[in-house]
Length: 211
Image (cartoon, rainbow, N blue to C red):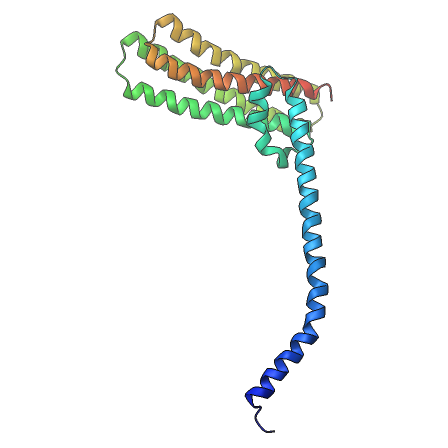
């Protein structure tokens, strides 16, 4: 067979383009349409989940803190009261761990009087107990599918309430020992943050019994 001239090659390309053109034009709108449908469905689901979180947070002590801390997990929570409470506990636990690290760092870096250092050290211990109690509450939550749901629910509420008490005790201890304002302000701000998260988690756990 004789080799094709450049003119013949160009003609072949134009013919192939005309043959492929209609198929490609028929295929692309369907592909784009499917993508748009999936995207619209995802947006609708996410909007529904976000509204569910907003409504549920309305029953907590600090609704704005609740919504801000949980709305980023909307895709995981969806419309599950269980997932909402579990996520709230995990957020509170992460906050407590972060606060513990910050207070421990202050204890090492700041020049404190003996009574101030003792109060801050006590605070670190209280936060440590709070972390343990929040972990216990998450464990109890994982056992809710067992035979004695009421017992595990009671345990969970007890652990979270104890964590809340420890967080309050930390703040009160610093007030009583007269910790200097600079240190106290930093610790108090962080502790109040996890108090709000923990309080909200407890409220969402309590709501599980009514759903």
